[in-house]
Image (cartoon, rainbow, N blue to C red; front, side, top):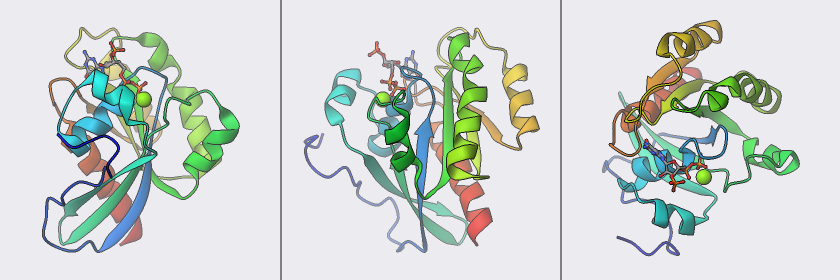
Length: 184
Ligand code: G3D
Ligand code: MG
């Protein structure tokens, strides 16, 4: 495992040079698993101790979408979910949003409405994927209810487990696909 103080840019999974570049942000309440999803996606690991020590602003990963290669620069909140003024910098220039809740924690789902508003205010009408994380735990939020939220807001819905590595790649692939649909 690489040293956390080193660059978090991963060896590129494809040898093809990137054709597009975009910033994406991961939002949602504290402790829903935003950092875990990002670290699982970029580093392929689930390690809470490691997560606490990272403290970097963003990760970079190239993803192949059809004939294009998107270089996704994915920003993490750095645990500052509640500090509004800082968040405006965080959102600046974002072309896609991963909106995460913890499906074992209904409060985190009830706050989705709030996050949707903040994203709209800060980023406008950008593509979003609603992520129900912790699918390895018993669901206390009905998937149908979450799916309805996505239908109302033309988003994609994905259930993930950062812990068991379920659908994490898929969630980022869907976001990449939506971002490229807008830009190509
Ligand atoms: P955040 O970045 O949204 O604040 P973190 O969330 O990634 O720091 O994760 C918060 C807690 O949820 C961590 O546990 C982490 O291990 C756990 N977690 C993240 N994703 C999953 C998952 O898919 N399944 C389960 N079961 N747990 C998950 P701790 O105990 O360190 O607070
Ligand atoms: Mg975090």
